[in-house]
Amino acid sequence: MLASFHDCCGVVWLSRSSCQCRIELQPAVKQEISIVADWLLNLRLSWMALIVFVTTNLIAGGVHLAVTKLALTEWAQAFKAVSPAMLPPLGILFGLLVGFIAVEVWNNLDKAKAAVATEASALRAVVLLAGTFPQEQKTRIHTLINRHIDVAVNQEWPENQRATLSPLPTALIGALHDALAMKLADE
Image (cartoon, rainbow, N blue to C red):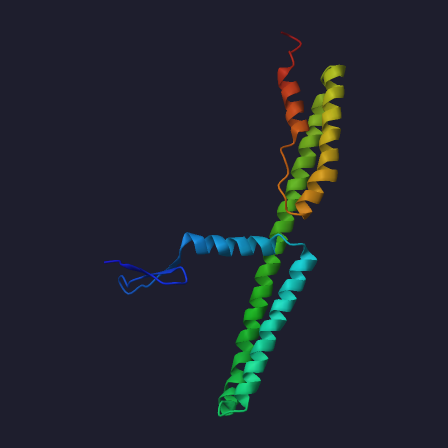
């Protein structure tokens, strides 16, 4: 039997079913978390680094203040016993976190390089194929490809830095339409 109970934080607690207990977030809470994550991930690298640095230092300062205040009480002996045992696991966790983040960054960089190489290769293939067309269509396709490259460099790349969505490549769509509308020589 599975019963659900709602609390004021938007968390749904599901009762134990075969010795398992699950916690699920309601859609509104998931959306709020997603908005914050999207906001942070869409910042420029310098702002993201600054926010992470400041947040980390605020948390570390808070922990330092709490430990310093508690060290003046009877907790001092407990801190002396726990501190040496906690440093190696924390160092390992930090190393793993940095490693996983680095792998994700390298994967994104590889995907971006592959996308650029694929688009450049496709544009080169269109230019080579356009060489077999009659002069009027060849000139039009070259003009549309040059317009596409200009839009990509001067509009899409700056928009990607601001994390905004760019429109469809209308110049390439026009070139494809022209190529498909051409009549073959043997028709």
